[in-house]
Image 1 (cartoon, rainbow, N blue to C red):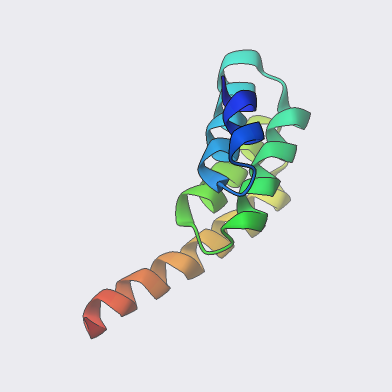
Image 2: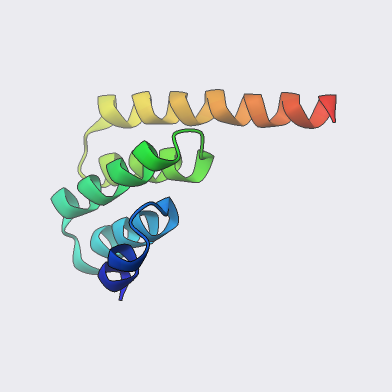
Length: 88
């Protein structure tokens, strides 16, 4: 299902994000999950949820240093979102 959506909308990071969750949670196919979430982040680098999911996938594989990097990146984005809300 997600693969078909990606074929139709290859520049929509949300489909890659959902595909990564499917691979990681349902199938435990972490290499495919990493590839899918990396593409999602490439398409939407400022998306907090995508960075968070990168960390979750790394934690699932006990790649704790990578997870830390992804969590710090997500945290930086979250601060940016909160600061923007203060300015609005």
